[in-house]
Length: 106
Image 1 (cartoon, rainbow, N blue to C red):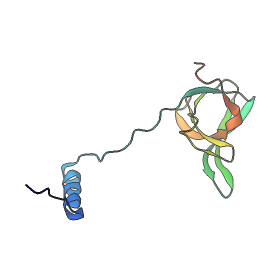
Image 2 (cartoon, rainbow, N blue to C red):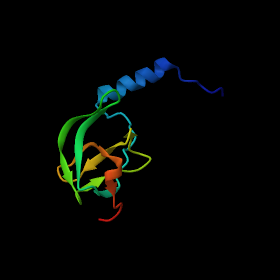
Image 3 (cartoon, one colour):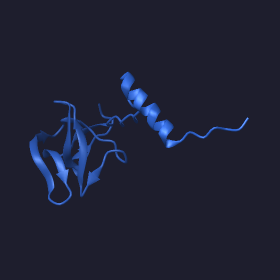
Image 4 (cartoon, helix red, strand yellow):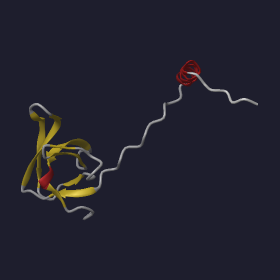
């Protein structure tokens, strides 16, 4: 029996049926941040990073020993500013990569 090749129209119809049934589309699981701490005396924690202007939206200043998360190779670093997770208020932001250390210390 010959193999049937699904066309884009068939795939579109299946996708529409999935949406109509309320099923969530498939997605990749994010990488869980690796436990680390702030190793600088203080580190500015920004909401975003703009490639043209640098970090934007100062959220707060983190202190030495604050528990954060960053996974080298998985979470981006732009011009020395690393995407990191602050486990205190549970939010993402950017701080200087050299202020991240003490991996797996807690």
